Image (cartoon, rainbow, N blue to C red; front, side, top):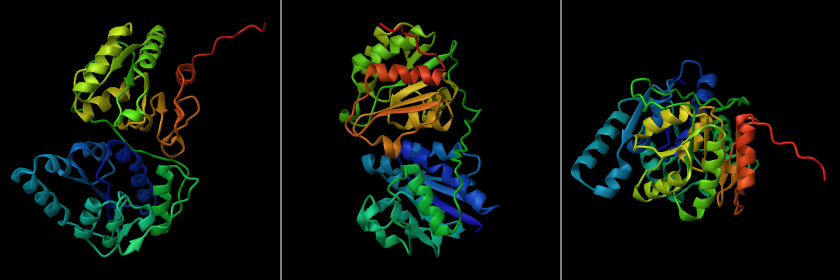
Length: 328
């Protein structure tokens, strides 16, 4: 194989999950060139991977909101750029209508996608002339995708999961005053949230461990919650609004990242930062990470993590010895 296209359009966390596929393909096919097509709002993630030859971005989400001619022209421009190259294989690891359309329009004889039962939208099946084998249920989401592609293209997986991400130096993040932790309290839905009172308690405990506490946000509602948390936590502050790359650069230098099952927390894990990921409704088995002494996942499947569990996990990834208690 000389050139492969990965089709993964969104979201931030899923873009991170897919990065190890790049290293897998390059190990299997030395010298292969890998392109990636993504929605413009999260196309920075594959751009952080120096092993990706070309990142094509299209403002799909923006056009859905605005539906203006400028957005439509930008989409057509992206499709023209897509068709500039011919691919030995196109891998749709997204599995919805829009990714299937992109896959169908790419110049290739080999279009790969998931079986109907595992597609996000079953109608996407029209685009593929090769179908991945069904998932292995015991695998996490990252491993399911890696295994599906390796079986389809005929190579053996290694155990290593190499994300290959490098933060660009040409867009410096705000300077931080001393070591800091980041609390990613926001989530995509209400049922995935953790109580503000718990964030305040954990933030105060982190501050007592000698770290500044930075609280990021992405919209007005999240900013108000960030202000509430920061106002009650010593040595805490609300972060300014930054680009995705700006926040990721801050994540890459953090002494600790604690947060819900969201994209930036998975970026922290990919960048090998001390990370604690909290799950409520989503599956820890599918989306969690566990690297003893460096990353811990808690809760999930309707089980909400307790404060004491979170604090114990924080001490574990920070290398803090738990207090010794005397027997009664």
